[in-house]
Image 1 (tube, rainbow, N blue to C red):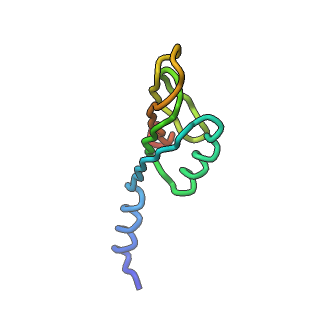
Image 2 (image 1 turned 60 degrees about the horizontal axis):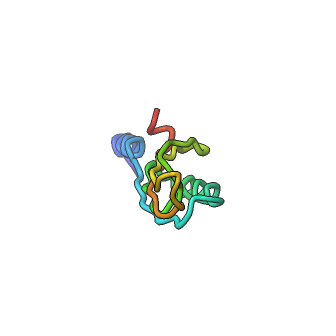
Length: 92
């Protein structure tokens, strides 16, 4: 049986938990819904992604996440690229 102090401590610890992940996604194009679904399932707050294959730099809002990305210049063929997905609850 858990005491009131232990229950209170357990609640406090859960509120302050932040989950990080790193993922080589191989391509963002056509897979954004799948990627966001997996992030929701695992309750990830920050996810560093590689090989986004997006051109240019910028931010995009995708469902409950904000994607900040950087890739090759727009004139070049898209390959490589990195990004960071941040859950909106953290961003606010």
